[in-house]
Amino acid sequence: MSTKKVRKENPYLLELVEKLRRKYSETKAPIWKAVAEELLRPRSIRKGVNVGKIDKILKDGEIALVIGKALGGGYVTRPLVVAAVSFSKKAREKIEKAGGRCMSIEDLMSENPNGSNVRIFG
Image (cartoon, rainbow, N blue to C red; front, top):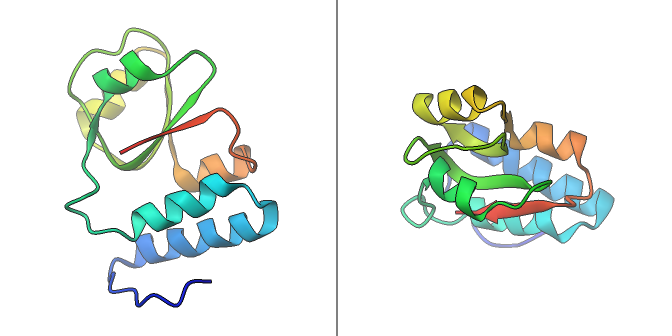
């Protein structure tokens, strides 16, 4: 583990980072280590991502992992699977209306332990 001093105070975020680090040590999938490191960066660097951008960039069969908040800007034209730290109300509505699925990062780790076909946004 890293010897960096963590100044985060959000208990949910700290617990999530620990879970990501444990998953990385179990599976050796580099995606979980990268996500944990990104979550420890300042919040001002971790910007929200609009669902319209996710819809444009994400390929079929891929899962979007948003490091931060998924926002409701833009249009969702197809079913998307999106995992994020949090979702705005509008983003959740748009994704589910298009037949997609919103999930937490913990759910993604349990369903896809190797992190295959996951694209990181944020």
